[in-house]
Image 1 (tube, rainbow, N blue to C red):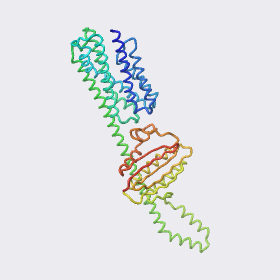
Image 2 (cartoon, rainbow, N blue to C red):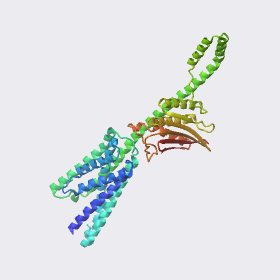
Image 3 (spheres, rainbow, N blue to C red):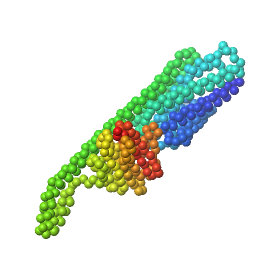
Image 4 (cartoon, rainbow, N blue to C red):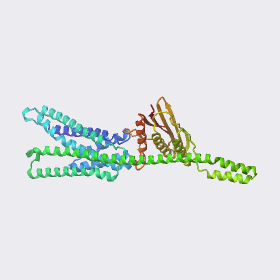
Length: 457
C-alpha cells in the first residue's frame, strides 16, 4: 500500500508540473510571437522540471530552480528574439519565483484539507478509503496551487505593460534586485529548517505551528514586492515615454513655426517680385528698343539667379501643407523615392492645420524610412472626404513584413532603441482620437497603407 501511495504522489507531481507548464505558456504568450514558440517554451519548462524531480538524488530547491531558470531562459532565447535577452532572464526568474510563492502559499490549505480527510484520526478510515481521500486531497491541492499561480501570472502580465519594449541590463538589475533578497530569504529559511531537523530530530513546524503561517506570510509579501517593483518600473518607463513625447511635440511645434516662416517668406517674395515687376519690365523694354540683345539676356539671367522663392511643387489648398508636402517631395526624390500627392486640405470643418501637419509630417517620415530599402521605392499621399469623415491615406513600398503589437495595434519597431521610436504613430493616433476618428495600418504584399480618419462635423 505504501508503494501505491508513493507512485500516486509521483504521478501527482508530474501532473502538477504539466499544469504548471500550461500556465507558463499563458504567461509567455504575450512575449513570444506565435503559438509554436509558446508551446516549445511550455515543453522546455515541463521537461526540465520533470527531469529534476525524477533525479535519483535530492537537490536543494534553490539549485533546482536555478537550473530550471537557465533552461527556460535558453529556450525563450532560442524561440524568441536574442537581442531581448535581459527581458528573457527577467521572465524566467519571475515565473519560477511565482511558482515558489504559489507552492508555499498552498501549504496552509493542504494542511487543512489533509487534516480533515485522509490524515484525520477521528474518521477511522480503512486503507482503501484513506487512499481515496488522499487522491482527493492531492487534486484539491493541485487546483489551489495552479489557481494561485494563474492569478499571479495574470497579475504580473497586467502590471507589466511594456511587453514589446527592449529591456536593458541596468533595468534588469533594478527589477531582479528584490528577487535576490527574496531568494536569499528562502534559502536562509530552508537552511534553518534543515538545521533544526538535524539538531532536534524533529520538524520545526511540529513544535512551532506558527512557522508555516510566518512562511506563508513571507511568500505573500514577496508577491507584493514583485508586483510593486514591476509597477515602479512601468511608471518610470511611462515617465520616460512622456518625456520623449513632449520632446517630439516640441520639435513638431518648431517645425510648424519653420513651415509658417517659409510660407511668409514665400508670399513676401511674391509681393516683392510684383512690386519690382514694373521696373524690371521697363528696363528690359528699353534694352530691347535699343537692340542691346546681349545686355537683355544678361539681365534676365541675373533675375533668375536672384529668384530665392521656395519652389512649391505640391498644391493642396493650404499654404502650410503646400510647404510640408513640397519639402517631403524634394527629400524623397533626393533619396530616389518616387513621390506622388493627391492631397487636398479640407475646405470646411473643424480640423486645425496644426493637427493635419502632425499627421502628414509623421506619416511621410515613417513612409520615407520604410520605402528607402525597396527595389522600386515610392510614396503616395492622398485625401478623401466621406460624408463628414476626412481621410488621410499614405501608401509606401516596403520589402519587409510588419509585426503588429496585439495590445497597441501598432507596428513593432525593428530599430535597436525601440523605446525612442513609435511616438509618431502615437501622436497621429491622439490627433485622430481628438476628432473622434481612428488610425489603421495594413500591409498588402510589399505595400504598407496608413489611414488616419478624422470627423470634421
